Length: 197
Image (tube, rainbow, N blue to C red; front, side):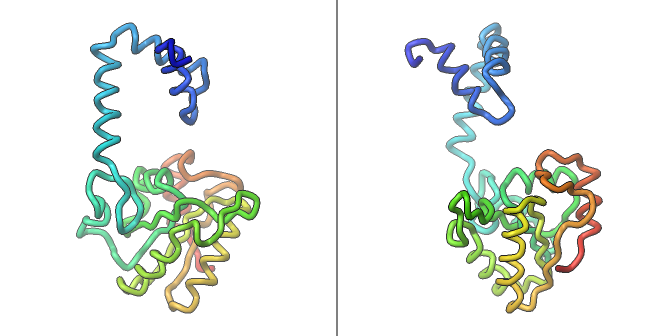
């Protein structure tokens, strides 16, 4: 496969979420029809992002600087931290303009079947932030799945001794739904209707 650059490119693109071999083949064909206008700028942008983007040391977001732009924003309400599974969820909430506080990316969910335990997630840094930054409310914006519920329960238990208010997203997020595929209105409504646990 490596000997044929077109097939190799199709195989690499087909690994991306939402792209199968058929979609990858169409994208590659379109790029090959105009390599100077489509393929070379894409390759340069991929190279730039690969070398410049890194995780934020504070929240786990991806940015070219650390702390990221959200953590550096002085207009954010630093008393509120929204906990999300991954960066895609953070970006979805930002698109919806639903949250004006800061974020904390866990980097996954607790999963007995998947072998993900508390030490595999960014829970200790969250607890340190709550203590150091006098956080008043932690908003759990985790998916409405078994693993999301398990993670929410675990975090609620760990956060109780801190005295910090713990809330979760309410209406609008369907059971089994992932935040990064919901529309902005649904996300905003769910965020406004959060309630204490």
